Image 1 (cartoon, one colour):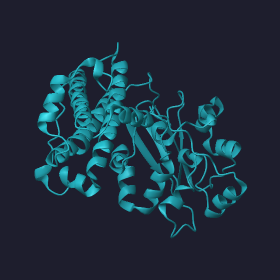
Image 2 (cartoon, rainbow, N blue to C red):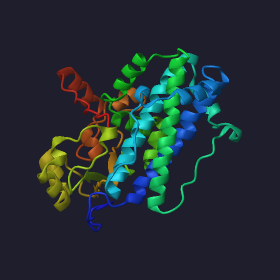
Image 3 (spheres, rainbow, N blue to C red):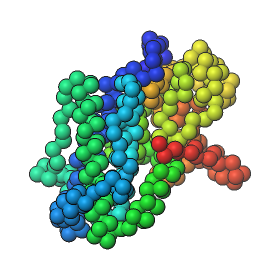
Image 4 (cartoon, rainbow, N blue to C red):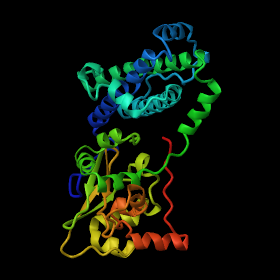
Length: 357
């Protein structure tokens, strides 16, 4: 089932393979053309590494001394292959974050430098993105080859940085370990920015994962992300009637009740009664209630309404008002007085754990 409740239930857990493959293609090209290769060029221009360093590192590359674990296409069926591609891309993105951080530290590279180098201000500097054509099977084969090639360049760049003395293997291993540990919860940060930045909010509601990608938030292995806004006229709720599909890469682990059969059944049968019974949340009679059913292909989360009396608050302060329940529609964002009272009592809701994968 995809979209608002009432659509035809889906037969399998992942059925929209096209959406997943398209997401991998778009993310792969974004991180290659906007993040990794512009930084390589920038660092070559400034002598941190040279083309010759990269060539020598490639010639000297041996399987036993590679930093990143080599990957090969895997999967006995199309769903397994798609999921493996998503995991592979996830590792590639983390690898870019690793080497970028080390290299940028070496040259004190600032955001403005990166924007210039990737062609944000001048089309001349833009790296051409690859077009993805053919059948789904052909595109998967192409993605497997692209990821193999791109990861090899990443590996060569790491070896060149080590050889030139900009970093040590031990330092990189420590940073790599940290990248795979729990990440900060992004839910409150995303909502606070949407409350204060109309352009970002519009992008978030219209493009979902693309807006988060530009914000620098890791989207994880999600085929499509849809953000639905609560307003004076509509109250949105999210469920996964099949299991517990949820954008946990962004919002952290799901609450225990989200997986419970009682919530998954009652929220569909009578959403008003369900939220009143389970969360003491009474949705006004004149307000429409919409229930969105998440799947492995499409994940949803709710953009809650901004509480009254928050004018003049910073994004950091606003982020503290956002709760996990409000992102599912099972609650409202906290009012400032509620948040302060919770702090005094030591009862501030703990941010959920955000898994590394």
